[in-house]
Length: 323
Image (tube, rainbow, N blue to C red; front, side, top):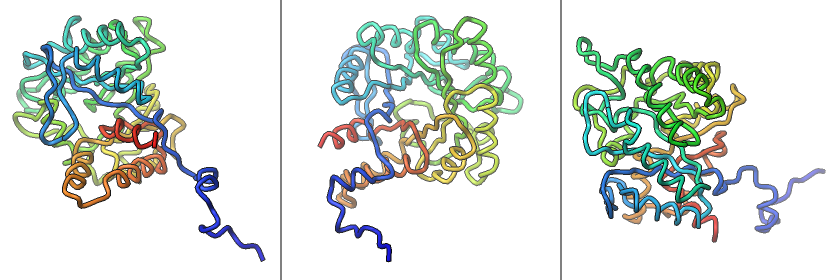
């Protein structure tokens, strides 16, 4: 009678050979938060180990990342001055465009992804131009300035853009604008299924992007809607997205799997600030075996179908993989 191997017969080498899911340092994109100034490296109290940094400190951070084998970063800008339309994000010499050029000059081997949105740049904290009558984001007006933002990033030398504002038609709008200006090969990583989630709280501390009124439920996904979530991602694929994303990750692994099965595109997950903070504070209070739970969480993302993991844990995971 056929009998499967008992677990006790699998030594560590054989376990590695037959393991179904593996995590690699090459899976990760590491988020970085850049602000004006020099010599700035300010830890965020709600996200231990995560910092707002000036560009000189970002360059040092890139050196550390490369030593760990991490060559992909996602940039968020925190401008000195914010206004109603996020003018700094539309400026050829704004915080993000200047940072792209500086990083590329010092670290040409870094793969730079930029967050394409307005919440970090507006004085109201929403993701675009406000319709003053309805007090929500004007979708079509925001599409127009999103095109400007994308072209400015492209001309600065970015390697990939990631529009996070969840405007209807954003992928098609950006693809057409980029193609028309000769950037046909610049990939778009779509925030294709971004939920209106309570897990984003600490991010709004580090990015200084909390809405000054209302919330973002009118342009982000209802966490209860599975079918709509899948449809949104497939719509972005049809519009020309190169990579699909689910955000947050941990509470939505069922959605990750269903989209992965329905689409041929690579799948990214954003392991968001609230997920990171929960593990961090649980570990700091000796409630969990922190390293073990971090790795278990990363495996769960890969097992669900993620090809790319955007995570504040990336440096920690890289160090654990070296052991």
